[in-house]
Image 1 (cartoon, rainbow, N blue to C red):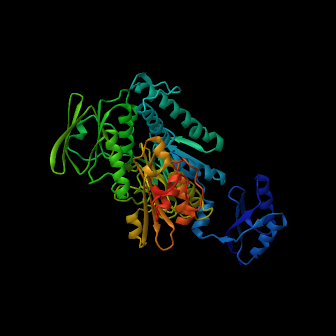
Image 2 (cartoon, rainbow, N blue to C red; image 1 turned 90 degrees about the vertical axis):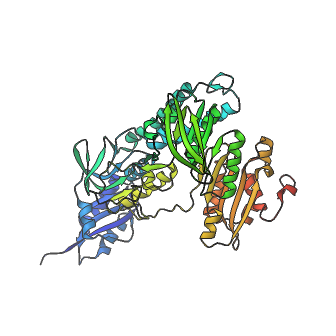
Length: 550
């Protein structure tokens, strides 16, 4: 009678090197196991053992050589086949941004053979055309707006003017440096493979790159997103800017019109205003930041208009035309027809996932209404071999979210363990001046989830740091559960609140209460002190308190 064998995956703690793997393989073979493979990076061994054998004997063999084993997992026929399947790579990643590198590093640490496919510039959006270049230029714009000469950047050619070409050159130098240090060099540091070219799925387990077919046990789609262009008559015939090309301008436009006042439009509009442009922001909705708390939207509107930025809401776009270098945007505002003229037109109406060229239908991967990759709570697509992470799923569009998701996708795709994503507490920062930072639930969201809500709204003119800065246009708003007093959301408009919101994130994530904030010492003359003052505002008038009085 033929002996039946079962396939087993056994977690093993204590292996630290390839020699450890050899000891484990030898011990398991002596215990009757066959086809043994051990990985110290994955902290496991897979093998086959006779169905009527004592699996505990194999576990005792591990203990006897000084390691400890966990609960054995009996592999299904499909899992066994996938584990034994001969493929070019264990894990193949399409894209090379934050999600991709986070996944590649994690997978390599787990002992997988990893490749990354990139059709363009390595590094993705953040380092090349997003966070890094925009924030360094925003900082330069703020310096210019304060009419201060920056001794380190040397941007000013005369009082109030900026050598934008020099600023862009400096920005590109920084981008190239960080791309090399934080992305390109990591291929050698971690040992995963770079494949240059465009990946297209050939079938459910194969991609084609440069005419060559490449197989993998599992895949990650991390191709990011790119600016979307609205369907406005005449726009395609006009020379317009996107968030990418705006950062490559060599001259500051006299007038800049911006279609869209989301976080990218607000940041870039603020940038060019600080550099000296006359800026007009145009938004379809009745107010900017329509999903934010009204107090936040109102104070941002006030701050923008106080700075001299033209802000138009409830706009309908009729057509765009160009005469010479002048763009004319024909609109109606509250039903009244107007024409906005500008030397440059920036389109900032959201982003779309980069999925068009992937041939996802062939791979059995479903997409949503915006062509975003649909994933479950484990970041798995409708093809169990294929995962997706980052902006391509149209979740929160932040580099730190993409990195978080990439690492989770890697451990799930490799079958090390199963981990769900948790995006309930994601801090968001818009780097205008004053900046906008939020975390947790808005008042409206909290009520929709069934909470009895208690709120605190503290004007920035009650925060000592803002007073001494002569920058008092802003607000702190706390949203709490009226029953438990637990902090549900924090929303702030103030200078440097990107540095404050992390403390608020901890408060929301770990369920701190109003009293917890009140009883915590807050350093005087910091913007973070506003969190404590806002907690006092739930039932006190802080304007009647002495400085530092709690």
